[in-house]
Length: 135
Image (cartoon, rainbow, N blue to C red; front, side):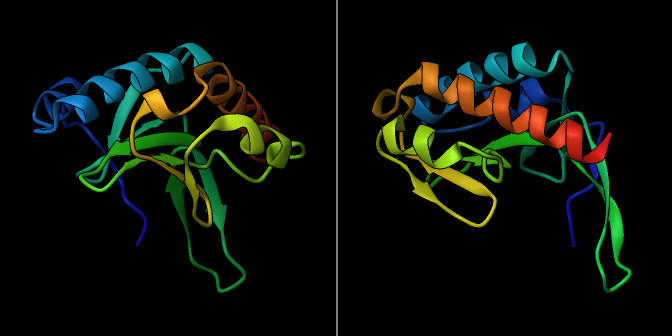
């Protein structure tokens, strides 16, 4: 099941992140994604900070709502949601710096390991792609 948007405090969630580097990185990504989307941050489930939303429907009939882009300061890595899936992503990711890829996520140990200008370009391109797909 996909996480649901809720009224939990984004600021309190980030403040409770025990790893100081991960907490500072989360604050930076929060500002970056707010700037890119122009939308307020909302908690999705217990640990995803998301921006904007869209409605999805699978061939199976399952449907729901989820954030267009977001992130989670998890203990293993900073997880960046839906920053993939658009034309030109491979070129940007090749230059981004140290990261791992999942199906719809990027995993970064520390923001210091990546090019922040390229991260912002990825966020802009991904958000634009999602808006075109689902608006």
